[in-house]
Image (cartoon, rainbow, N blue to C red):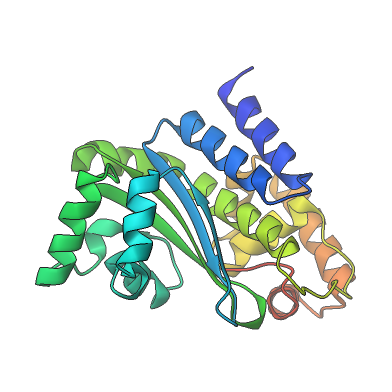
Length: 239
């Protein structure tokens, strides 16, 4: 099985998952597929309920919870203030507490490089999808440049599945968008041009137009901008 086929197989299994444990299986397989040290997905609902899956060690996870690092972690703090993916080097690590946290994280095998994708969902949900690795700056820049778009799509697919398992989540009243329609509308929502969306999804711009028009019809939207707004407000896509 080729690299692309392997990834599609993992995501297809994720799409049909019926329980939370499937997210953990998928994230481990995706970590191996991309050849990185760690992948982590963590979400917090509006009422404070949390769920996480990932490949950090149990020792680091327990230490993180014990020290309540979620309140001071520069990645969490920095990404909560952003809407677009961020390389950890762009975050503020200047404070003494932040530097100490970074040293401890690296000691626990987290890696000196990281790329995190913040996600906003319906009703105040906030999630973060993170890839981390230990390597030099040039190697990491090459990796993120090559995989940025794929990681964004994967992050949102993880979040869509996690939302299905959220306790008390009401069923959607709107007509469901297909996985390809969700991918197209998500990329448009985060600012990709139509040409970039078509390239990312490996489809023609004509096919992309079909997906967009289909989504617009299902949402009862006047135009693409209106469709994106409706999809966001109904939780059909998240950015």
